[in-house]
Image 1 (cartoon, one colour):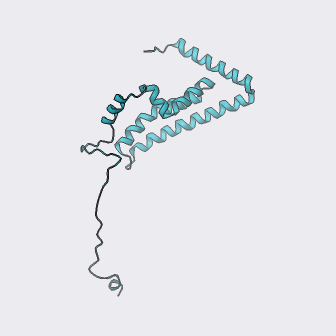
Image 2: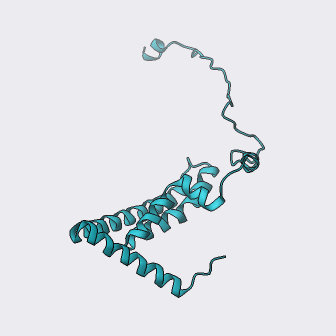
Image 3: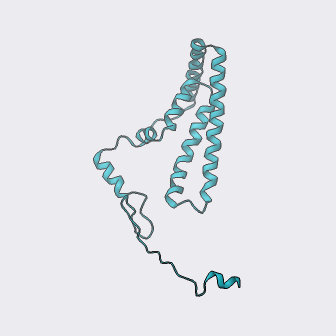
Length: 158
C-alpha cells in the first residue's frame, strides 16, 4: 500500500501550487484568483452539504439502506470539499473526479466483471431484516372498500 509521508504531501502541495502558476500564466492572474475563490466557495458548500447529509440521518423517513448510503458518501464529500478548498488546479481536478459517483466506484472497487456483478446482486442492500427482497417488479396489491356511515351526513346537521 502507498505510504503517505511528509515528503509526498509536500511534493503534491508544491506541484499543486505550480499548476496554479501555470494557470495564471495561461489565463491571467485575475481569472486564476477567481478560479481559486470559486473553488474555495464550492468546497465550503460541499462540506456544508455533507454536514446536512449527516444531520438528515435521524429522519423518520430515511430507510436503513439510505442511511448506509449516506454514511458511505459523507467522507467522500468531505474529502471533495477539502480538495476544492486547497488552492491549485490538480487538487480541483482530483476533487471533480472523486465527486462523480460512477468514477469513484470504479477507482475504489475496480472494474466490475460479470462474476462481480452477480456477487453484488446477491449482496444487494434491498433485503430487509425480515428476509423480503424488493425487486424492480415487486407489486403490492390491496383492496379498497368504501364503508358508509350508519347515518347520512345530513342527519348530523339537524
